[in-house]
Length: 443
Image (cartoon, rainbow, N blue to C red):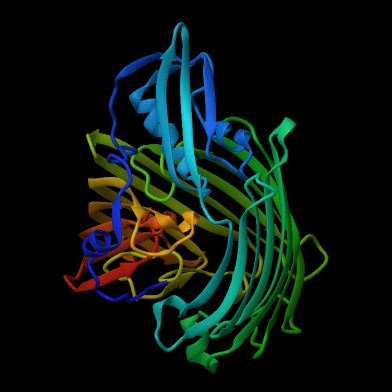
């Protein structure tokens, strides 16, 4: 979603509303100072969160060799749980015993969420509504959410995720359901008959296992229904204008990133394969995808991130609603407002990040806020980037001219509650420039 917030300076806001809480949070620094072996890990400050939720996310355990780098890595991993406003880890010794003290401050977990914005960043497509999320149900990092949205692309949704459904076997499980009316995204189809709506209904169940600190694999499946308001051959697989079909996905993920919302080191690899239709309907196609991301520290507070991804289909009829797009979830900076459609996607990014302001934690003193909202965390980075991407149909030959290229730079702000604000300027391969403001990390 593209946003256009007021131009208030974040530094001025911090000066007026906050006072320093602690020394600079060095989450992103890469010191290689050896501290010693760890005998015991002690967790404090987690009034609602079970201690094992924190301990299960740490690479350092009793018997591990503690270094400053390893401590900072674990601090970032714990913060990436999105359960705490601040995380501190200290190493200390008493006689012959060596301790790690993990101190956290918990967030407010039941969050009413006003929902407002513009679909695909288009001011002609406003939506609004409300939702509620419980991000730590029963203190086990379980997530329970529901939302009701009106305006452009109205929807109602419910989801429940339990990452520790069976802790003894490291198993997770979840369920979700939703109803949505989606305006057709295909410019090709709109040019032929005008805009039309797709009415989606979905019930999904998932389960899987976390094999190591970094590796998970799972399967999800469900029932999906799509009805188009204006039928044309190819918009659905069924000639009735309604597809009702079963689907199943198998997936694998390796995630060793330090701070998930804005990584400076580690890797993310995701693989998936989805089969749509098992003979119960006209639907019969599959989608496969791979997404590789690697973040390599170069110098203190300097890192390079690379990403390569693709998603491709196989099967008979690929309905319009199953097409892939650049210009929606995936974008090429320099062509941020362009909409490219096809059945397959491929893209890549290289981005240099200089974290010139490592995340600072502040205690708000001038506003009457509950403790859960009184701890704020800010950081800032300079980014230089280059993007490439292409969308194509199966009958097309993938070639270099299909790819759009863009490059540029900007400032990224790490905000409280794990939000990222990107402010960038990009040029495309035709020399046309554009300003970009977004509320998510680029990779």
